[in-house]
Image (cartoon, rainbow over the protein chains, first blue to last red):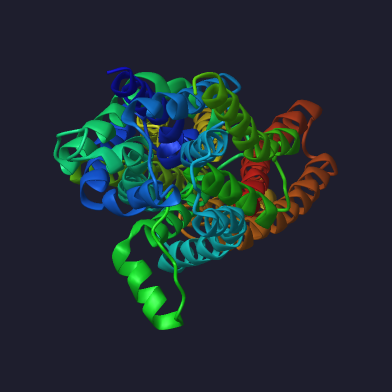
Length: 329
Length: 213
């Protein structure tokens, strides 16, 4: 039962931590109100989880081919919860999927369980690559969106209306894409036990997981959104749109079976659905916009502080999980 | 969403009405000067009342527009610029209304030799206001056009300065006028010229806002 409570807590923490990635820029740029944005977030995070979470969720099954007992998931979840909680306290939006994978690796190393290093290496490679892709992609998307809006020669009040409508649309799509990623993080760890130790329908599990995320977002994300929304760099509404568009492209690309199968077929590669850090994509996108504007109004110190957490947080989680596993072996 | 779009339309309409009212006040003031030189004082009084009513309407429109922009948290990026623009623009009808009242009440004795110069000063200021209103309308659609119009405002303001200097010279070099008359006329030259100065101030701010956006 403890593992279920921890999964519930993790879901709530994820909601508090990740809502900022979807609507943080829009709320930070004062284009959307929290009370409106959060309901869109909840609805689409649940939809994304039910429709798409099964694909990135599979990674948790595949990274450790020979699995462990269900009770052991507590040892894996505990370091992730602590690390995420601390990062929220430090006002850093951290990557929960990465923390989970590193916690699993720490646990597996300590307990001598085989690890699929091929998948792990490819995961690390993609995780390093995605911030760079986001950084470049957001500049292209910003340029495209800005050019289209300028081309329409709209009155600024209509432009404001169009941007708000697009922010809601893009936000919903990003929440949908994030729903599969995030729910995969909470539920994915339990997927090997489905129908054996846990007798529950997978979709119901995804629904419960994403509902926890929604609850976390509803009750605990407001302060984080207002803190992080404008902490790194001043975000204008068009930048917020470009950031969301980048998130949608990156997250959907790596969570959609349809897209991955097409890319694999087209380019003869062996990509697989995997959880991507929305926090990293968001920060890299904000920095991409900041770079495009010559790093004016950018808090470099804060940016470096958050980027450094991308390295030390997984390491801390790995060490914590490793020693916790050794202690309770 | 359609409710939201209606809000935007209402705002655009009220800003356009505000700008058109300023244009109307400007045109009425031109007519008022013509009537004044024709010594049609009844016409001057009627026009002054019309200008006053329109000026009050401008105040109401500005306040309701500002309130709405803040209440609906619209155009967060340009909100400060738009509010600054509306507040500064509102000084122009205020100045024109004051000028109309002063002319109606004080009925300055402007010698016929000076009529042409006074007329060209009023015409020039009127052009400044027209250009400014055109630039202000474009601010919401095409900031580049705003900059072009606002630069022309500055050019016309300089022309206005030259006309007013010429007028003042003519007034003070006129030996048929006593000093009190000269001072009175100089005062009227200055308050009429003030319209162009105010227009230039708004134009300068608009240029900065347009470059920023």
